[in-house]
Image 1 (cartoon, rainbow, N blue to C red):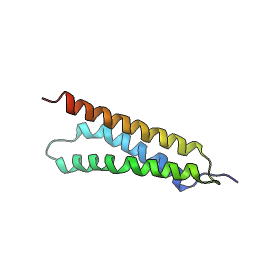
Image 2 (cartoon, rainbow, N blue to C red):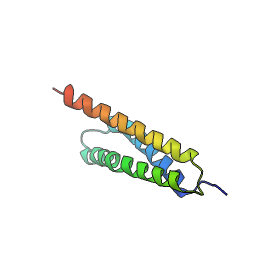
Image 3 (cartoon, rainbow, N blue to C red):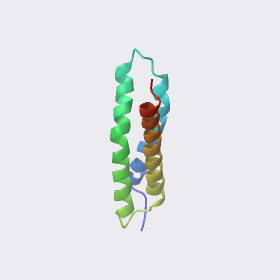
Image 4 (tube, one colour):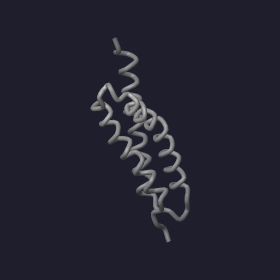
Length: 94
């Protein structure tokens, strides 16, 4: 019987938390640079972890794929968002 496990839920939950934290980052005051740095490092570490968990969930025989697919799509969207911000930062910075 196929069912969802913690791997599927985690592969969906991590990108959701990362997207929410990405929109919190511009609102962090400049005096709390350590919080902003922690958010940036969590983006860099969290996206590959989410992709790995999604692939593991997709490869398991006794696991439903719907949540893992959504988690993988959100992780790929996060890669696109990060790449877009890096492009803007490198090409249009003063």
